[in-house]
Amino acid sequence: MDRKFGRKKSNREHMMRNLVTSLILYERVTTTEPKAKELKREIDRVITIAKKDDLQAHRRILGYVFDVNAAKKLKEVLVPRYQTRTSGYTKFYHSGNRLGDAAPMAIVELIAEEVKEVKETKKVVKEEKKEAVKASK
Image 1 (cartoon, helix red, strand yellow):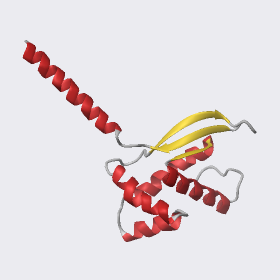
Image 2 (spheres, one colour):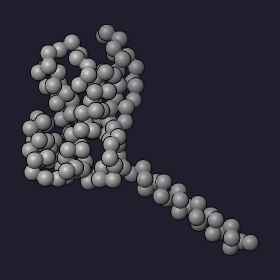
Image 3 (cartoon, one colour):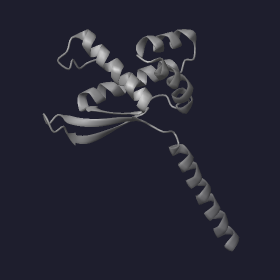
Image 4 (cartoon, helix red, strand yellow):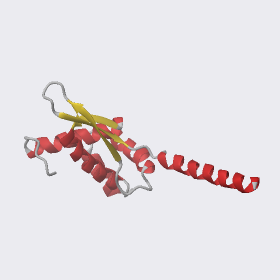
């Protein structure tokens, strides 16, 4: 972690673990921009560890997240979803400033992998159009 957020090390680590656990459970988190940038780094590490699929990885995940349901969801839902990806599991959106102190806010959400299916269907449609043009000639 590069950023300190004006906190001691133990509080900073605990805050990141809370954010990672929440992101795994709810797949979307709203927080300040610096925390969101650090969260992206941490969630990439956690998902990469979970993808190893061995006992040591499972124990490391259970030791990191605060909720057993988050570890279970990570293993059963998120790891199969990101099997073909090596990194970049999150999207980052700027969402304006917070009203109380004008802190820049951001939304971090996990990427759904259905995007590749849409691209594949576009390729199929293009190929069908080409075949239709050839058939009409």
